[in-house]
Length: 262
Ligand code: PEP
Image 1 (cartoon, helix red, strand yellow):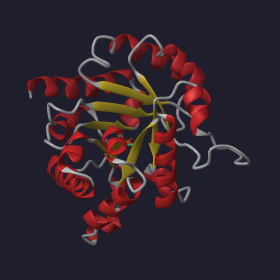
Image 2 (cartoon, helix red, strand yellow):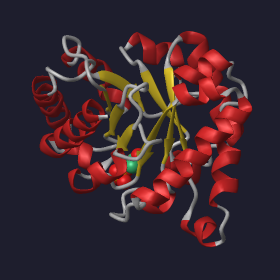
Image 3 (cartoon, protein in one colour):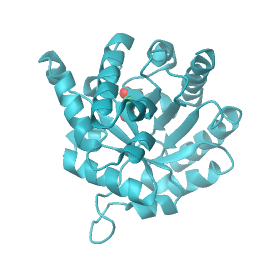
């Protein structure tokens, strides 16, 4: 992790937790992360869409940022079940996760849709967390970098250099999400370094050096240190382990401590 990039850990709650569980978790996290969130490290949580405004209100006094898990590629109109970027801003979001592998693979989201969402997010002031990652089959066929870098090119294709530098990119190998199989620190670093090099070719070395790259895929307190100490890994996108206050808190603390030692 580089000292020039503020680390960022975001918890993706997916379609989990009842309202009382979600509010309880938000209260506990606000308390436990009071001293470090926003200071040494940026911390975000991504509750399910119906809970966004209530969780945003709970976290209002803390520096925990609120992320949506998905947004529409359209500004408004006849798009049943979707949420617009303005609606997400209205309920207190600062971030939006785009192109999560579950959205790509289960709901058929295309690279073009993700690029369009990234464009709209920046137009209205929401920070996109752009997810990329290969399937197991693609890794085994030695296609990892081809697949990931193509997704990166597309996700950033409509963004200016300044917008790119404010974006977050999450490398999440599909085979590591929710499976308990984590990429080794070396495997993750290899892909992160390739993404940063690719961004330097798309923009410049300075812009590539400013983009925060998260790793996601079965991050837990036990494997966080190895992953977060890699030079091109600037934080984590955490699924399962973000649903428990202690494990998410530990991941945030470990990540934050590593940066202060850099
Ligand atoms: C995710 O959903 O983005 C994720 C990384 O999940 P998990 O940590 O459970 O693998």
